[in-house]
Length: 219
Image (cartoon, rainbow, N blue to C red; front, side, top):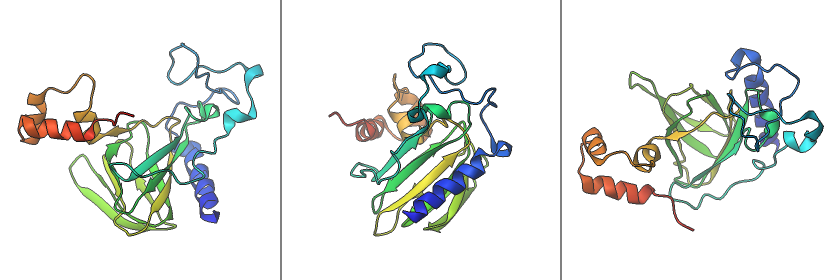
């Protein structure tokens, strides 16, 4: 539990610093997101001050491990403006990522934010790729941190025999996530087969197999 609070404190202090800010600067003390508003802005419209409560600044969802019994063996629990309306205009958010042994947070990007992870427990192999296709990779342990630059493809893999977990911090209230495989093979409408077969140098059967494996499971 002590490591969890250390992670939260360090990452919030570092990434909340205006020097690291990515989202637009705020113009008032608070602008709690009105998640019911239909107003379209770069961010969310502000809730009326008289309707703001302490709950708008609170979220307990990343205090406990998440379920990792899925195809990838990992679970990302976001603590962004959609979960904490009080983050609106503050330019910071967090998430918790839990990994089963062998679990993978597959290659993905955050188009609006740099990410910094702090390992709560376990160990991970992590890495990112630059636009010149150079891979930077590192084996990280409990208490270690690692940074993934804004917009670059990156991943985390638990090659250990025990579960692992990290706390991630972002310099955006809503960093966005594009998982490479899911984006290309499960989009709506679908990316044309002839685009995927040519890009990956495979046949239509292989494309359909990948689509079937990545398709969201129906409950």
